[in-house]
Length: 387
Image (cartoon, rainbow, N blue to C red; front, side, top):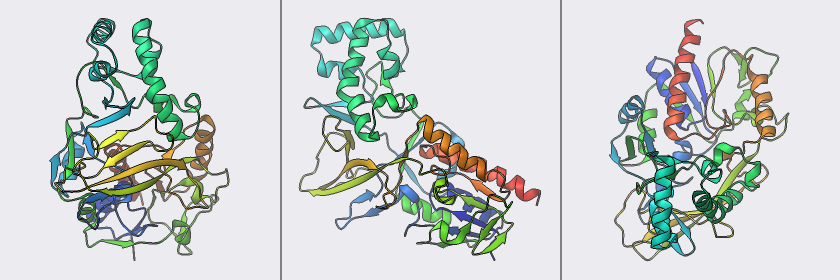
């Protein structure tokens, strides 16, 4: 008989399950997919190329505690992600930096613009496109408008399927603009990839005699939620053990306040008879009409092959009927309000613990969800101590 139930076998669910197993609790994990590792799932294709099924992931953090945690379960190798954007027939680094200025301005124009930026920002190493568009300096503001018109506005409109003015401002601030020649997508002290694979990392986390995994099982097939009850029903019986839910809240409550909006993705894979297709592992193509970016998997991580494999990424609206994957929550005043209603309805259920990208209706980097999961472990420990 299980002592704890975890719904979802992604990062949050796996970390919490391992913690409880090490506390000598019998843990049953319920997973709707046919594999572990959530969106970090990777596999080797017919040519032996390691491919990430749900898009590119690298682990990066400034928190040594989180870095030490992942090293318990796998060997990791340094990997600094380099990304680029393809604008007007040229590859340029992203986040945009001084190389971008050199790429699209004459020598004299570039010299003046970089000089103005250094003077205006006075040693600051990066800013946001939102701040630059409001800059008092007309030359800097003009540069920001160029970036916005050629990249941010086009990419955002495709990625989210709505006008940039309707998107939460945090989305436009997510990728900074560098005020130097510094390259690289992240600044974190620890930037790594697993030496073997992400699945291997998850297999090691979940390799514990107290953990049982049930794949291909929908949460709604085993869970019953009554907001008038203080406890969850599992397999038709009320249980008073911890139930950790990492999935979507609207699904859990039968969409009573409507479907929470997400963007989804479709990947088009191509194996190409060349050693290199593009100048970076991940390249955004804002000026393309339908797709947003291309990931070249022989560069993520570096895999020495005489062929390469790319995944072209097409954004689309999440659709329940078509069983698309919910990737990115669309954060608007309305959707945040609806999510708050779902969360409030579940708040009085004593043994239900919510944690994860879908459960929190929030986009997380891997280090952020790991930190959230570790904090949830403390909350569950405290609850168990009182029961």
